[in-house]
Structures are given as structure tokens and as C-alpha cells.
Length: 121
Image: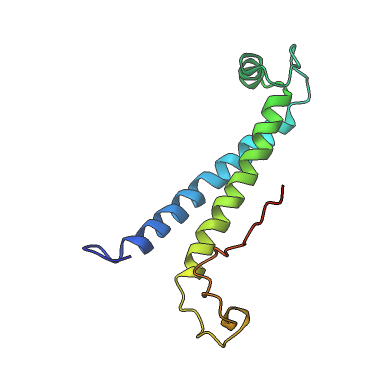
């Protein structure tokens, strides 16, 4: 990052990592509690948030709670991977060795690679 605060990038990554470290155990406990509910709730409609909240309060199992629990763990995993990827991208890249982009094409910047598309009618 450039400008008045060049060190804000690493600080934000550290903050994100600290938040993830605090949230992860709480989410995993909530997932375990949601999956531990042995008694199915009275309403088993998958997308009924009112019934899911009632089941959560009473300690019952509800399909929506299971879906939310699984997706929460997956979301935290994705965010962790993104933070780790940012840290890897800050490391200097090796010099271009004249690889695939040396054949007259402009070099690829970052992760974007231009793919020409031709539509035939």
C-alpha cells in the first residue's frame, strides 16, 4: 500500500487474523451444539427462520441450523485462506523468465488473465 500509512495492510491482516482466531472456536462450539440436538424440532421446514430460532432456543435440531452451521465453518475456512493468500501475494515475485507470456502477449498482472472470446452467429 502506498500513501500516508504504508503499514496499514499488515495491521489489517493481523486484525483479521485475530478476529478469526476469536470467532473460530465460538462458531465450532455453535456447530457442535446445532448438530448435537437429538430431538427434531416441531417444524422441519428447511427455510423457516422462526422455527429454526425456536429450535435453537429449546436445544432442538432444525435443518436450517445444520445448514447455517456447515456454511459458517466453510466461510471461516475461505476467509482464512484469503488472509493467507494476501500474505503470500505481498512476498516479492520472481523475475519473469520469458515463459508463456513472452510470445508477444502482454504479461499477466496479478491473477487476471485475459481470455479472448469470439461469438459466432
